[in-house]
Length: 99
Image (cartoon, rainbow, N blue to C red):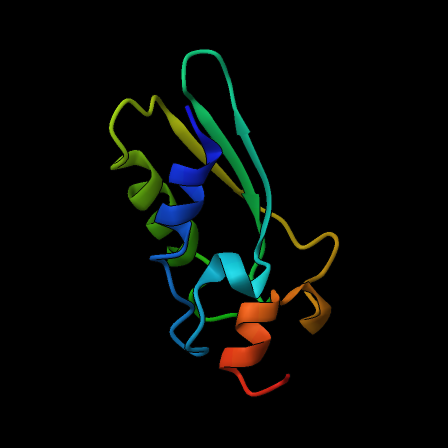
């Protein structure tokens, strides 16, 4: 399985409070794929009290699970290290007017 397909799926998931996809926001910390195409993702949210902290990982799981030939998808939410704006991609910075 190509990690690019997973990244493309993650770029379809948006934080409803920020008009940038979660991948370019830097919310995805790890993407691991095993030999059976099972995917493990470690992600965070912009703040621990984020109102969608429960639903965002499920959205991630659903988008990645919709990729053909993907096995099981496990999404783990973490707050370590905490998200900071320096995790934004250049594309996100440009979209948010920070470049």
